[in-house]
Image (cartoon, rainbow, N blue to C red; front, side, top):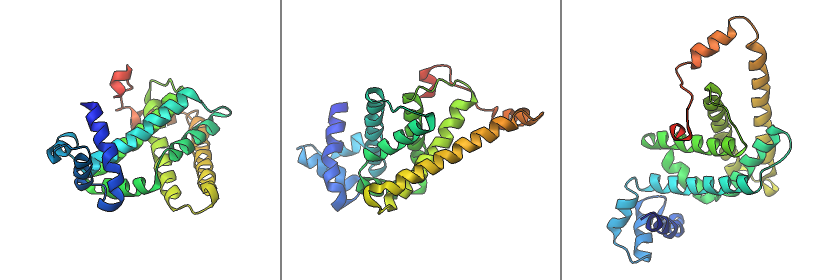
Length: 213
């Protein structure tokens, strides 16, 4: 069943530039596979949003495999930046633009946020993050924002080899690292740690990998 769903998504992708990220492309893909158009609705009931999610998660799977096979080296901030850069390398700008148009719709924004979170989780997990407290969430929330901003910059980047995007990623990571240093220093001030716990204490850290899901 999963294989049919994957085949259907793959068959739909060539139709997206002409028909859009929508059910029309999925039905066209179904026809290419000699399947009933109803199969498209059965496997992708959310239409374009579900197809966009499938394409995004395939990129995350590619990144997870890359991190497992070719883990970046160097300073941790450089490893995070390299992972973001590689994730963008796995993406097709035209597909991302089409997906963004669909995921920007109000009813699809929770899914978009979940996808950004998923990418951040792949990066942190692939780089060996072992946190099991509030940091598990804060790290992913912060990196989700960095990745989302990087995607937007990347889509408009006309520089050779999109090197301006790489510099943008580095600046964003540097900003996060400076914030983390400031936060660590601030927690030494009496009362600040308590305020942080009150602000994020409602979040319960995952106990197992299943809880994360």
